[in-house]
Image (cartoon, rainbow, N blue to C red):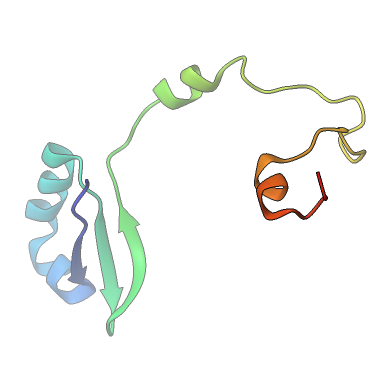
Length: 83
């Protein structure tokens, strides 16, 4: 489980290099807050590897707005479609 560190923008301003090195070394994201409200997330750059893993996994539909004719498992469990 990834631990998310949360700091204020003013704390980040004073400790930016240290905090950025921590994100880089641990891989854990950092949340910056402004008056206690989360406003930014800093996370390590993952490069192109995610895009490469997903390459060739997208299905092509000739008519993307038309129903596929397949029941969705989540809806079946709730009995929405009465299947």
